Image 1 (tube, rainbow, N blue to C red):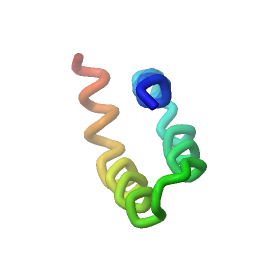
Image 2 (image 1 turned 45 degrees about the vertical axis):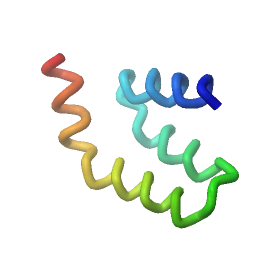
Image 3 (image 1 turned 135 degrees about the vertical axis):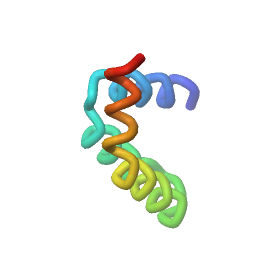
Length: 55
């Protein structure tokens, strides 16, 4: 599981948010948890990318 998280982190650092969202959808987690993660990333996409360009 740790490997999966590291993979998603790398994708985020490469501005591959759509791939991360797709990967979350493919997990075996409960759908309510998936929806929370997907909504978080979609809601905060601008902030996430802004933080990457500043860092």
